[in-house]
Amino acid sequence: MKIGNMDRKAGISALHWNVNSPAVSWKWGGKKIEKVYGHRLFKVLLLKDRQSIAIIASTKDEGAENAGIYNADGSLRYKIKIPSIKPICYGFCDVYYEKDELRIILMTGSRDYPYDTGCSFNPETGEIRNCHNVK
Image (cartoon, rainbow, N blue to C red; front, top):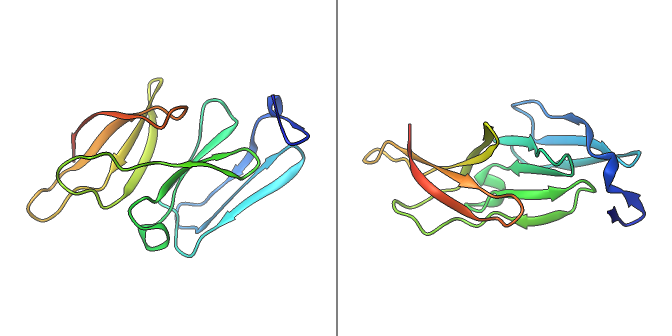
């Protein structure tokens, strides 16, 4: 499959992100792609298809819907929607693989409710399911 005139089979390479950095960069199709935000990024993860990157920006930059899936060319595929759960979600804070399943963590903790919420996440559909409390 091609995006523009570039072959998707090549995949993303040279992903570079430092934990306290507001920027992430990678190479794709011989070009350097870079995303720069105002505040440090919470998390960056190259997805297993090597054609997509999950970026969780600071809520100071993006508000509660601070997570997105980006294509290899740097274009936004979609913003990850906050599910209707209780307690109130303040945004996303982590994304990672647990075995072969992609997991996403929502910030739901407060002084009265000391738990965040962990969910399964399908990066192809954007579906969030099987949510439960995590510390």
